[in-house]
Length: 91
Image (cartoon, rainbow, N blue to C red; front, side, top):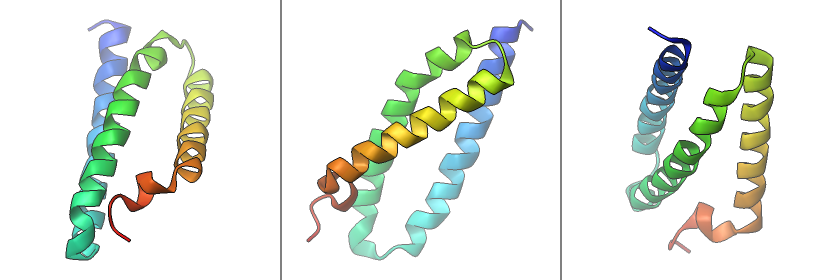
């Protein structure tokens, strides 16, 4: 198996673990927030899917770590700028 396929497989395992963890969190949130959380999760997943090809081009774990940290910081900054992404349609 080539390096690119192994990286992709590893990244997908990590992502599925994170999604599984998020599912447990969503069930703890009140009923009225479930749809909003699903919408936010879809938005995050799409953003992350667009980011994964960049990770596949990186050559070291340090580069991957730095890129993931930068991605998460920028994603969170974007959420803070647009509160409606966090709150959805619930007041």
